[in-house]
Length: 607
Ligand code: G6P
Image 1 (tube, rainbow, N blue to C red):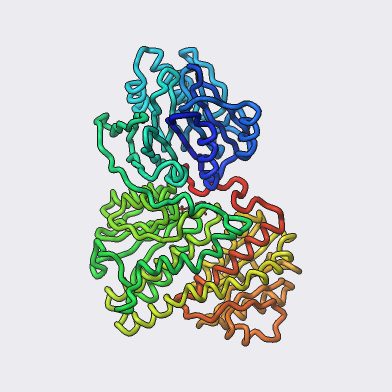
Image 2: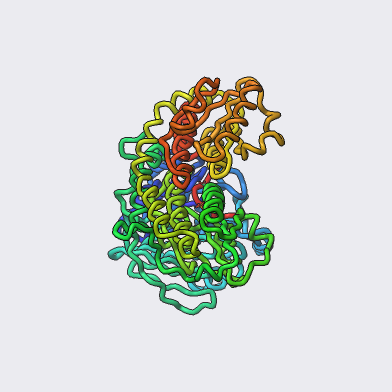
């Protein structure tokens, strides 16, 4: 969601802010803007739509100044038009903000009472006016900021500049991440380390409730109670070079094709080839004493959790619950003492998942997170953080993050099953052998790209698409439907194949594409029966199966595509690849913005 950048530079900053905003584009946005202090006044440029519009505007109306803030806005309060684009400014203050100020209506009313005049429909503007109001009362910038922090409710991050203080940027974190970059006589502020990567690798992350006074020569951080605190300086792993499209047309295409490599990288951290077994970092619990594992996530990460439940129950004989973060956190469920809660998130910042983590912590749960972004909030707030090594994922629709999540979850399953006494040394070695074949099998599966492009041409004009799968293929069917709707805007539903007769079968008429995910496992013949029901009603069945399954389906009217034959543990990871390729090609065929689909954000930092 909204991207924030601030630069205290040695020379003009507008161009550098624009470049940094470009790196935050992946978060999703619909307008953008930059403000600087120039000749003792605040000057700003804002434009609706993509950054190219802002760039054009800056071309005709350049912005001078060596201190500035910039923003990509994902609309919450007020439509994505220029007057609602950030920075919001008064005569003394400009601000860029991510998240929601929940008490903005009361604050706005109060500030209007003091004669302040608002220009936009946003909640953000109250920050600019409140800070101005406090400065007008004679406070200095730091004490005005401290006072303001006690007045703002909600989950947010923001960065502000004050006209009379060209040496200072103010930043705050209460729910959404803020990274402060330390340079050589320069300082930077960003929503994440990806935005800051070309500027500096030395980063300090604000913690919940912190606010910071950032100067060119360093930063002073205040905790919620006002005390000055030290936060560690970390060297970010995000490198500038990693974020490019290479020879691919879109980031999503590149990220799909990176999967063999990043799955291999990820396995490298969890597989010990000498002992032929999976090795995880020391666990902060003994599985024998854990009554239940609760998995919580959102979006694609939730489907990874769904699949992990199948594995942990089946292979580990463990009791597992899986829940959507946004539902879980408000149900306030009882949690068994000594339970383990596992939070899965590419970004490590999704607000609902992060708040669910904090709720679980308050219930005495042992917290494990599985994230792709190192140093993210969920990485830092867990008792144990497991990492995926997918590298930065820029395409809004998640691909390589998902398959690397599944890779780690498969490793976790084997490790816990072994600790739980449900897996012999030999069985562990057999499963581990299956996993290490995964990168090669994934590379082979990518050869389906041309077939998926061809079938995409047929799907592109359709209105509805159904995805069916049983057992471990059910979460993959859900993920397939999500991928398609996210980037092609075609209505798609994922269903457990056995549930088809309880509703979705009514949707099947002549020519409705039904994508059936059917590896030749123990449930194959059941799914094959559902396939016949689809064909009997004129559905256009497209089956993803393996060589064995394809042989069994010879002679059916369905279009059959063959994924390399793999063991049940790794098959769902492979079957994910053609559904990603298919969704990608449909979106391209429809001429959509694949990497930044409308209305979507990469990291959802509001509720
Ligand atoms: C957004 C993204 C999805 C992602 C979901 C959860 O909706 O567009 O691709 O799956 O958030 O994000 P997380 O970072 O927590 O995995």
